[in-house]
Image 1 (spheres, helix red, strand yellow):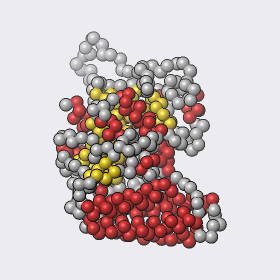
Image 2 (image 1 turned 180 degrees about the vertical axis):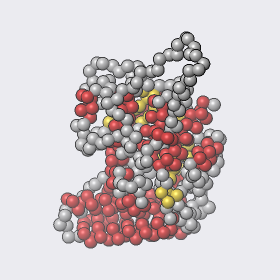
Image 3 (image 1 turned 30 degrees about the horizontal axis):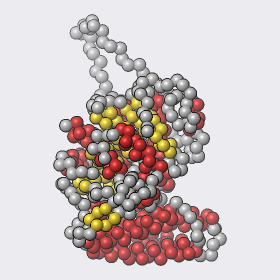
Image 4 (image 1 turned 90 degrees about the vertical axis):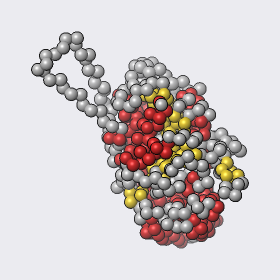
Length: 492
């Protein structure tokens, strides 16, 4: 059982055996232990905290003696809004980890950083708790590694909370990144300059694990027995914190802003409208993920019962994964919410549902042939191989959903973007195996064919949907305002 240490001055005893805890917050020894990892010791996010600084002592209490009226009082500086704490681009995993560690170092009386587990790649998973009132909110960043907007949102909210500017009735719990290994595999585009990325840069550096390998979708569910260490850590945190509200921060590629929730809360459509309007985001289009789902209002969709969803013809269709994090948090009565914001605004593919379904089926055949040739030529493994196979299966599922729900499936950008995801990961797989077999006679021609296919589809998608990149202040700002509004909603 996770036991969150009490708040207060840091313990001066010895560090834990794995050198992961913050029991010696701010000491050089602890930070040197962290530098043993591979990868650069990066600078913090683009609004860095001074790691050598210590908080100034609190201002002295006002004297009982009233100062003369002719002596002006110096006005207190206004506290920045949480949106104002956002940087120009999302942090990488190392930047995020460094910034969260600095918060715990600099504000040891306000917050505590607790180890809760490790990723499959050995990265430490830690929970930042910021003491407040009796309302407990748990916020998770990076539930899918190709969705970095939430990493910026977590950092801004954490800084806002430790500054004392947040609602005093909330105790905050932040799990900065649910899948740090996957986040690092997306750094070819998340760390690329400039930000926001182009459609091509995004898909050429894209990685999203197969559904059974996603911590977000590996919770206990109907017929699902797979368990990942990252999911185990989240389960223990949820069971210990027993939050009133649970937020998993997602972003989509294009489309409208929307919410996914674990129950039909009637006030959420109004919260969505307000947050989206404030940041100039549209609401209304149903995403391909939510085709066939119940909706209590425009842009709000209720997650289907664990493990299954229902098609238009009434039969139950099993998901290709376990339950989600919001499902699990709901066991403790938490209102689970995923605010989803797009990376790009688009004009919409303007495809009828049947046309979108046919594009997906045709692209699936092309990619399936290329994938079969790649597997036959070289029996090489990479992190991208299971993801390619799973995304091919997802393309078939979405094509079927578009056919079964023609009234909801029109204008789906995903009909053009899902093939790009698959082609991008296929190319990354070929990059890996080519390094191991640089003189293989079949790989150069196969890779050239895959590259040409990717480039052709990328140009077609850019022409059809005309993506316009959104600045982080609007996308992450939408999530920040949503989380703060959720706190107000739960407080009544």
